[in-house]
Each structure stands twice: as structure tokens, then as C-alpha cells.
Image (cartoon, rainbow, N blue to C red; front, side, top):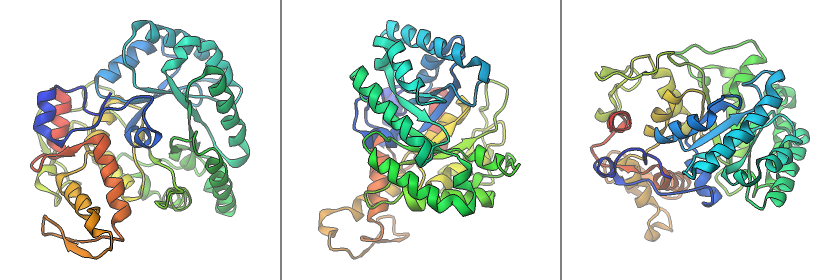
Length: 387
């Protein structure tokens, strides 16, 4: 699979200076963590889940979480598990490529049990999402994955969700983060990415952001994100990929995008190619939050509606300017440091301070591609919608 693989090759050739790479469930963990993109959540109880998975794959989704936790009622768990077993068998029988599939469980005991029940169709499973992760609660989940992996003979990843009150409350945050860091480091080979449960953070204080506000406008949430990135997102080799929080708002109508362009207040003042968007419902909050995610060290995003996927992916493509700067900074002859003028003659690139940014940018370029010099968000969004 690849990002923008759902559009024709000729369209990709028009859009990309460097096309997104191919990857699959067996690719290196570093590649998969960067490639998660917009991870679409779906309740595990959906009766036509296999059809839904393939439908979303055809629209560009590359990672999905099939949820047995908060998205379903407590009384539905048993039926949800049975449905997952049926739907995985259906997908396996079709013999087609599927996105990276993860199951969000409630208890550690579900992990080996589900792997056993999935049987041969478990080859389609990439791992498990672990809710309300802390040092104490996380170890049994991670040990269950180790056990299930050994029994199934296939690599399984963990994606812990950081959403517990211990992380939110100031008096327990440092201890909680230190414990989580210790635990995920011990199981580093199993942990693909860390996910932020911002809805749970807001819930603890009875808060809910409006459609024109981002998670970063809620100061208590911003402080948690900053501390999580500070401890767990470092670029010195000890950090992990941390994904962006969910965007809650969407239109009930099937089509969120309409053919005419309109001016977006968020995009004004940026590069000319980004000044307009194809949006029917006001998605400026989502677009702004995606940009702020990356500015604050996050990569990828939790999504609960298919219409959010393409904007996340379109804004994840590396611009030609970013790519040019990153390549210049990482040239072998620049190993000694120094300062150089950007090829775009609009900034100074400092080799040593900007090295980690450049390495991160080239990894994103590998999985999301590099846009041609005259291609921006609007063209990428339009191609994904119409090609």
C-alpha cells in the first residue's frame, strides 16, 4: 500500500516531485509509525465491517482501529468480539490488501484470546491499541501481546493510549510520565506509536472544544501534550512517534466537500497554493489543528470520520520547499555544522540545530511524498476527491 495509492499513477505523477513509498504490514517499524497517517476508528460491532474496511482502503485509508472499548456499550463486547472473528475471516477469504488493522481492547486477557480465535485470519492483524495506559496497567497488556505474538508466530505492535487522569492531574503527572517512559522503553520493539486521548482529558474537567477551536486552545490539554512530547517525543533516539488527538466534528451528509473553492481564514497569508480549500462545512479548526499537531511534535492523527482522512494526508505531504531545506541541511559536506541560506532565499538553515527537523522531514517525505514546486494542499485534496 501507499499514501495516495487510491488515485491513478498519472495523477500522482502530476502532483509529486517524489512519490510516496510502498509499505506493508511487514515494513520496518520506523516506516510504519510515520506512515500511520489518519488512523480511522470504527466500532467492532458494525455488521458489514469487512466491507467498510475495503471501502475506506479504496478511499486512501492506510490504518484502522476496530474498537471494542469506548465506542461500544459494555453489553456489546461479547458480540463485538464474535463479529471481529467473522469479519477477519471474511477479509482473509477475499484475498485482497487491507489497511494496517489494530484492535482496541479493554483487558489484557482479550489479546491472546482474540489471536487464538482469529486463527489464520490473524495474519491481517497488525496489533492492539491499549486504553488508559499507565506504568501499572500497561505491563499486563504488553506482556499479553508478547504471549500472543509467540503463539501466533507473527509480529504484533502495541499502540498505548495516553488518557488516564494520572497524566492530566498536575500532582501525579511527572510520576505517571516517568513510569510510562520506563515501561514503553522496556518494550520498545513492540510499541509502534503512542496515541493521545484528549477527549478523556477534557472529560475530567467537563470541557469540550467547539468546532472553531483546536485542542491547543484548551490550555489544560496543551500542558499535557507539551509534557508528553517533552518526556516521550525526544529526537535523541529515546522518543516515540506520538499521534495527534481526535477531531470530533463532522457533517452528517455523506459529502463534506463541494466543487467550488472558498477562501479559508486560516490559510490566508500562507503560500498562495494553500489559500483556498474545498470545504462545505467549516473545517478551518481541523486544518489548523493538523498544522499545530506537527508544530508541536506529533505525527498522524486519530480520526472518527472518513471525511477527515484526506485533509490529514494532504497536509502531511512534504512541500518542495521543506524537502529542499532538509536535503541541504543533511548533505554530508554539512556534517561540521554552519549556517546556509535556503535555496528559496527566504530563511537561514542552521545545520546542527535543524538536523533533527530535517531527518524527521525526510522520513515524512518517504511515506507521504514530496509535492511538486507548484502543488499545494488544494491540489492534493482535489485530486484525492475527484481522481
